[in-house]
Length: 196
Image (tube, rainbow, N blue to C red; front, side):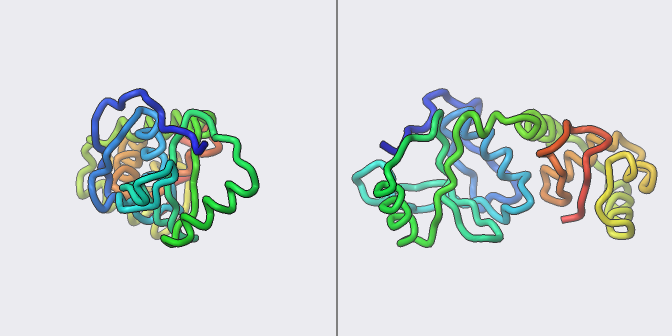
């Protein structure tokens, strides 16, 4: 009735990022992609793994991924296709989640694989281990503090880092130190960078 998580296994069994309070168990590649995107989403403050209502029946509670966003806490449910629900089922689901102070954020395969965010998030995380020296971090931070949000190209011209600027901003985004606009255009020199 509520859709089942994807059966495909992820490459690693846990996901960890600076926004994660704990390492998050991962059930599928699709769930890992949803977590990659959530970790880079400026509206997500923290990612928890905690006791939540069980949307699929007994027992009454399970452990689930909760995204703490600026507008509230959301239970992240990842499924291949969103299930069809009656208005009554939607209301009951909202009541179950509301009793724990949660709302539903249901993401299906089409939503998660929507471009350019899907490829951009993966590309950013490919730079997770890219080393950015303290000197380059300071130059990038100063340029963002002085001139505000700007494209990667503008940031490169102002900060003049001694490393690959795309790799640097991606690594800093993985550390939750900068925010990247990944929804509208492919990752590159036109991508907008903001201080976090």
